[in-house]
Length: 312
Image 1: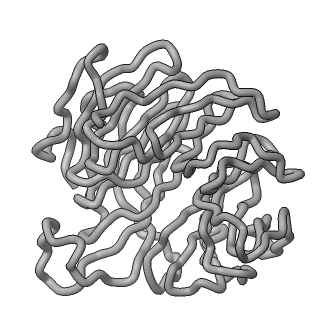
Image 2: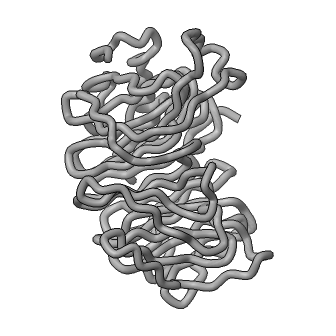
């Protein structure tokens, strides 16, 4: 593990007023008063939403998943580092490298962040060739507020593409096992079968998890393994790319806009891909593939729409 500033490019900062993402916005996370937008080149844009754009920080050599809570944010990259940030900070609180291959998913659990990733096969560890390097089966590691890693006994066979967390549980979507989810509940491993797998999106909702597959959206009780339908989908329905829970409402990002359950109510009607969803206070934030960012109430009223500053 390395401490703040040990990654060569981390902490390069553009001040507010001239901050602009070099790449197209692709990742989104939100805390209590600030949001975090990132591109695939590892650049982070802090935003005092909606008042003003804050600072731009180069955090990773390649962009990756984001996660945020009221008190902190975590970012992952294919470098393959994980960083923990105070809101608006130009330097991370810590930088960790729990895997040698790449980071594939993040999930915040209390004051900790759970990190899914893969290691490189063999002893040669050249992160510049990450796209061609052979990778071992995935795993999940807990990082505490000081960056101390603890491997979790989550039994996975391949790449973990999605994570969902609760108070004493975590559920992972394992790409090598499309017909089931892998869970760790109160320290005990569990396999939860899902219909219509593989899972395309996964999120925690209070004490439950919600998973999307090609045939439906399903509610999972991690403690019993019970799976119940929230919505049935046709095989030709738009693929659900990500899920977000706000209270009991569940939102799904698709290529035809954003849907809300219960009742599958369309929140937006844009013929574009919603690339990321985040919760801001009690509202929904939607990041679109053209770089625009919208804020909606959960009942379907658009509050504002802005363009994320980025280079064309």
